[in-house]
Length: 86
Image: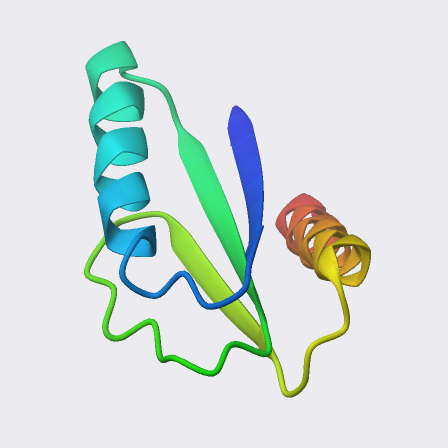
Protein backbone atom coordinates (compact mmCIF):
# COMPACT_ATOMS: atom_id res chain seq x y z
CA UNK A 1 0.00 0.00 0.00
CA UNK A 2 1.62 3.27 -1.09
CA UNK A 3 -0.86 5.84 0.21
CA UNK A 4 -3.44 5.73 2.98
CA UNK A 5 -5.97 8.49 3.57
CA UNK A 6 -8.04 8.72 6.74
CA UNK A 7 -11.24 10.73 6.43
CA UNK A 8 -13.31 11.35 9.57
CA UNK A 9 -16.78 12.69 8.90
CA UNK A 10 -20.07 13.58 10.54
CA UNK A 11 -23.36 13.99 8.62
CA UNK A 12 -21.65 14.16 5.23
CA UNK A 13 -23.51 11.25 3.64
CA UNK A 14 -24.30 13.14 0.45
CA UNK A 15 -20.76 14.50 0.01
CA UNK A 16 -18.73 11.35 0.70
CA UNK A 17 -19.50 9.64 -2.66
CA UNK A 18 -18.47 12.82 -4.52
CA UNK A 19 -15.20 13.01 -2.60
CA UNK A 20 -14.48 9.32 -3.15
CA UNK A 21 -15.05 9.65 -6.89
CA UNK A 22 -12.57 12.54 -7.05
CA UNK A 23 -9.96 10.67 -5.02
CA UNK A 24 -10.40 7.49 -7.05
CA UNK A 25 -9.92 9.41 -10.30
CA UNK A 26 -6.74 11.05 -8.99
CA UNK A 27 -5.12 7.86 -7.71
CA UNK A 28 -6.04 5.78 -10.74
CA UNK A 29 -4.68 8.54 -12.99
CA UNK A 30 -1.40 8.33 -11.07
CA UNK A 31 -1.42 4.51 -11.26
CA UNK A 32 -0.73 4.38 -7.53
CA UNK A 33 -1.92 1.92 -4.89
CA UNK A 34 -4.06 3.46 -2.17
CA UNK A 35 -6.57 2.86 0.56
CA UNK A 36 -9.16 5.22 1.99
CA UNK A 37 -10.29 4.71 5.57
CA UNK A 38 -13.59 6.44 6.31
CA UNK A 39 -14.63 6.92 9.93
CA UNK A 40 -18.24 7.95 10.47
CA UNK A 41 -18.37 9.78 13.80
CA UNK A 42 -21.93 8.82 14.73
CA UNK A 43 -23.74 10.56 11.87
CA UNK A 44 -27.51 11.01 11.96
CA UNK A 45 -27.79 10.55 8.19
CA UNK A 46 -26.71 7.33 6.48
CA UNK A 47 -23.83 7.25 4.03
CA UNK A 48 -25.57 4.71 1.86
CA UNK A 49 -23.92 2.05 -0.21
CA UNK A 50 -20.42 2.92 -1.38
CA UNK A 51 -19.34 1.14 -4.56
CA UNK A 52 -15.71 2.20 -4.66
CA UNK A 53 -12.47 0.25 -4.63
CA UNK A 54 -9.97 0.41 -1.78
CA UNK A 55 -12.47 1.75 0.78
CA UNK A 56 -12.81 0.74 4.42
CA UNK A 57 -15.74 2.24 6.32
CA UNK A 58 -15.98 2.22 10.11
CA UNK A 59 -18.65 3.85 12.26
CA UNK A 60 -18.83 5.12 15.81
CA UNK A 61 -22.18 4.37 17.42
CA UNK A 62 -22.25 7.88 18.90
CA UNK A 63 -20.39 11.11 18.22
CA UNK A 64 -16.96 11.10 19.84
CA UNK A 65 -15.37 14.03 18.04
CA UNK A 66 -12.96 14.54 15.17
CA UNK A 67 -9.87 13.64 17.19
CA UNK A 68 -11.30 10.31 18.28
CA UNK A 69 -12.45 9.56 14.73
CA UNK A 70 -8.89 10.22 13.49
CA UNK A 71 -7.49 7.95 16.22
CA UNK A 72 -9.89 5.21 15.13
CA UNK A 73 -8.67 5.57 11.55
CA UNK A 74 -5.02 5.38 12.59
CA UNK A 75 -5.67 2.31 14.74
CA UNK A 76 -7.45 0.57 11.86
CA UNK A 77 -4.57 1.41 9.53
CA UNK A 78 -2.03 0.02 12.02
CA UNK A 79 -4.03 -3.21 12.40
CA UNK A 80 -4.18 -3.76 8.65
CA UNK A 81 -0.44 -3.05 8.31
CA UNK A 82 0.41 -5.57 11.03
CA UNK A 83 -1.82 -8.20 9.38
CA UNK A 84 -0.16 -7.63 6.01
CA UNK A 85 3.30 -8.15 7.49
CA UNK A 86 2.43 -11.60 8.87
